[in-house]
Image 1 (cartoon, chains in turn green, purple):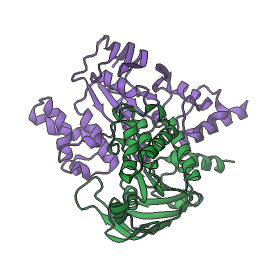
Image 2 (tube, each protein chain N blue to C red):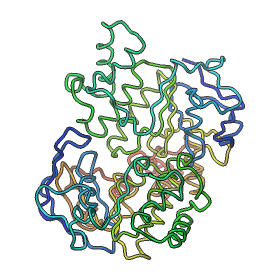
Image 3 (cartoon, each protein chain N blue to C red):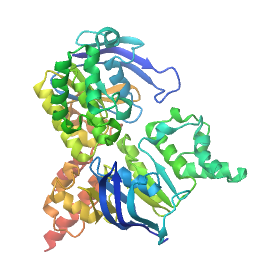
Image 4 (tube, rainbow over the protein chains, first blue to last red):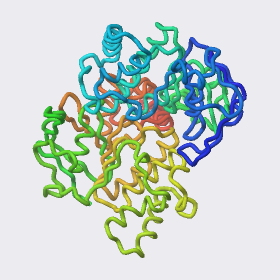
Length: 250
Length: 270
């Protein structure tokens, strides 16, 4: 369970995100895929960073499975692994195998087990025949898959994705969702996806929506859809719009 | 403007391996030229080859019938162009390329301001601001304005929509459509549906080959066959009964709804 209780945060220096997160509270149980939505600069990425423990809330409390993620990362690693938008910022190895092994090395996993897990994970993500490939030979989409694989290999209890599909080609988007859903089903893992692609909405069961640094909607996707008229900040996906227009016709 | 950017028997390789073989065709004015394909299919390499940064190719790239001299005649924006900001104000960022081209000092600022205005950014409000203070959509527009202000004939864009929210994507797509009347605009994209008009031109790279489609042909094939190209599911679903229609609507709810209404009316009359 992820819990945020009256959490606020603002960045001090002029940065990419010089805005304020205002007293956000919600709880999010494991077992369904939660979508975090909102426009550019709405605060959704900041929430993901707070949960991953990369930044500390200025007021309020963040807990993941009962622990404070910011303190936890200092001693025992991630409670919630995070995948960023830009894969280049997250790749540390010089080859695919090295990048996959990096997290495990830091967790002190034995060499033999590391080999097995690297191979197993690589093949699950379609990178099996690229283990020795230098990472700069990979395309953008392949790099993103590698980032996902490199976090998944550490088996965190939560996975956060910060706009994971924005750099993928549409085939890879389909297979990304397939992978994530299979992973969420087969492992005891919570999945939270930050996204602003309307096409991704169909994959979410629960929605947290942000606007201007505030949480403005928290509930199942069906409820969002039923109340969509009262949510002026929300850009209705074309799929919903079309159904609505067609239903209205005699 | 009738000049075209033409590919003649062009084979682009990467690391000794041909990624796109024997491309023949042309990119023109007046419509967006879309370049689509899977990750690793050679889209970016082709873009870089046109720009002259990637030299591992054989065959010819011609502009207006002569070999294309890329230096000074193109602008290229990379993925996430805003990560390349290096000036402390929006104005300096946009003026930079004019300054590098040694334009008279008196022309630089007016031209940069005029250009920002065209990209929908009011210079009075934006000129002195730090690029990092802007929203994602605004940053993207500043980056594209800075890349295009020198008005080169060829504009190459590598995934200009990635990372933008839906409103930003739509607004940007409209601006790029305008740009296509004065420049040859080639756009690498994973969201062709945002741009696709029936007269768009699509170069689809797959399995080392390139095929050219009109927007309409591309939509039709994709509606038939998700393996060909995965367009948004709602669109394929809505269009499936109309596969025989001569021209398909663009991928947005309003256009699709009025298309269906027209087709129904037509069927009723028969």
